[in-house]
Length: 514
Ligand code: 5AD
Ligand code: SF4
Image (tube, rainbow, N blue to C red; front, side, top):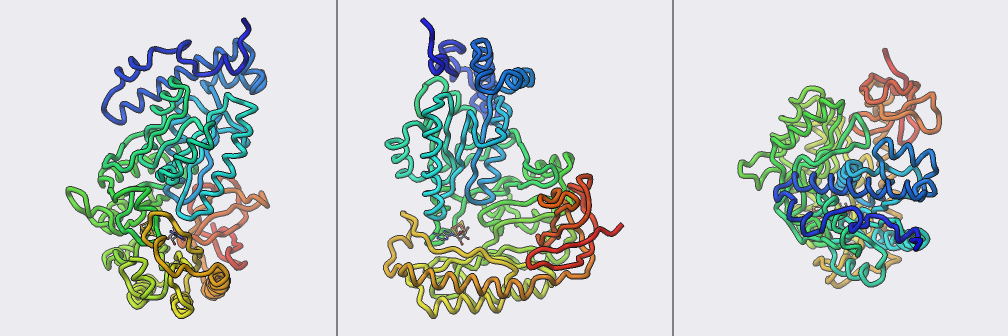
C-alpha cells in the first residue's frame, strides 16, 4: 500500500529509533551532558528522516531538488523560525534555542515559512498575549495544509496555567509547550515529541538550577548579551515577572567571567550584562559579591571594550556602582533606571520601595558624577488609583530629570498580581489622555537634552551597513545614540573615532576621523 506523505512522516520512531524507555534509560543524569545526548539523538532522528524523505522524493518537493541535496550534504535536515516577543532576556533565550536547533540539524529559514516554528512569548502586558494567539491562528492554518510542520511555544506566557489550559483545549495542533525554566531542555522535549507523537508540555514552576555550558549562538559577531542572573524577588504589585521567571538566582562570577573571556576570544567587543534587577546581583551567592565588583572584574578582560547592563532598580543602586561608572573607561555612560511613577503614594502602592524625592536625588547624583550619562526610564500610566495629581508628579519628575528617552506604558491588569485586585482602576479615556500628555512631555525633554555631542569626536562601535544607503555605516556611541557615516562593511565590529556633524532629532550624521 502506498503511504500518504504525512504518514511517511517524519520522526516516526518505530522506523528509526530504539524504544523510548531505552533512550531515556541511557541518558546521563547530569547537565549539560544530558542535553548533549538528546541533541545528538534528535539529530540522528532528523537525519534518518530526511534521508527517507530524499529517497521518497518528498524532500525535493518541499525544498527543491538542488536545495534538498545541498542541505543533506551540509548536514541540515530542516528549517526553523523563532519569533521572539518581549525583553532582552527573551532575546537571549532565543539565541540559546537557536544554538540547540542548529546542533540538532536545523537551519534558520529565510522567510516566514519553516519546518519548526517557535514563539518565545512575553506576558508583561496583555496585548503581548493577544498578539501570540493571533499569530498562532495563522500558523495553525498553515499546519493544516502541511502537517509536517512542528509548532512550539515557550517563554513567560507558558508559566501561566490558564494559558496552557487554553492552548490544550483550543490549539491542539501545537506540538511543544515549555516554560522559562525549561529552555535548556529543548532537545530532550523534542525527542519526547518525536516518540510520543502528541503535544508535549513541560513547564516547571520554579528551579534553583542554572545549566552552564550549553551551545551558544550569537546574532552579532561583535556584541553579546550575557545573563548574570535570572528571576526577580521584588514583587512590584503590577508585575507578573516574579511569578513567571521565578526567584532571583545569580550565576557564579567565574562562570560569567569565563563566558565573557570566551566571547572576547571570539571577537566580541561589547557585552550587555542581563538581569531583571542587576543591582542586587550576587547577594544570594555562597560567596556574595556586589554588581559593582563584578563590573570591575569584567573590565579586566582584554578585548572587551564596552560594558552595558540592564535593568537597574533604583532602590538597589549603590554609590559603589556610580563610582565604577564614573571611573571606568569601559562601562558605557548609559543607565536605564525605571521610574514607573513620580508619585510617592503610587510608588508605595506599586511596592517600589523609593519615593519621588529619593528617585530625584539619585538621578541628580548620577548626573553630577557622570556628566555625559544618558538616562532612560520606564513609566506606567494609569496604575489603579492614580489621580491627576499623581500623574502631574510623574510629569514633574520627567521635566526635572530630563530623561534622554522613556518607554511609556499603559497599565495592564495582570491576573494574579496584587494590583489586579485593587479597586479604583482608572477609566480608559482618562488613561489615554494622560498617556498622550506624557508621551509629548517625554519627547519634549528628550529633544531638549539630545544632540549634546554635536561637533565633538566620539568613539563609535560600527554595527552594520546602512539599510537605506549602502555608502553609509551605522553605529552607536557609548550612550547608545545612533550615528550614520560614510564607510563600508570592513568597519563592522570596530570602534572608530567619528566627528558628529549634524544632529537629526534622534541620530547623528558624521564622518570618520583617521
Ligand atoms: N502594565 C504596564 N506596564 C508594565 N510593566 C511591567 N508590568 C506592567 C504592567 N502590568 C512595564 C514596567 C517595566 C517594563 C519592562 O514593563 O514599566 O519596567
Ligand atoms: Fe517586575 Fe519590579 Fe521585578 Fe522589574 S523589578 S521585573 S518591574 S517585579
